[in-house]
Length: 90
Image (cartoon, rainbow, N blue to C red; front, side):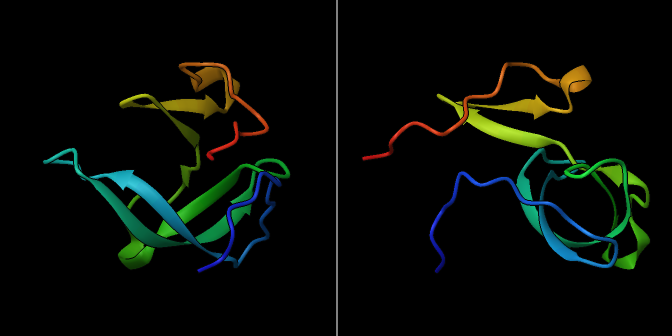
């Protein structure tokens, strides 16, 4: 398994990405595959899930704070300010 990095990633149209989303009925966290179908800016992509679900969904960046998952980007949807670089996990 690869190392975690604090380096920001950028995407291009056609990239396949793993996306964390909440299951609609249960609220369980799922990791699902999606394809980048467009770009809003260097780091924010428009995605399409396999099977066409949620075409046009945009990515949000999340951070775990204690026992809560918080939105940190885009700023107009953020619930907290981001912590970057990430604190030492040791």
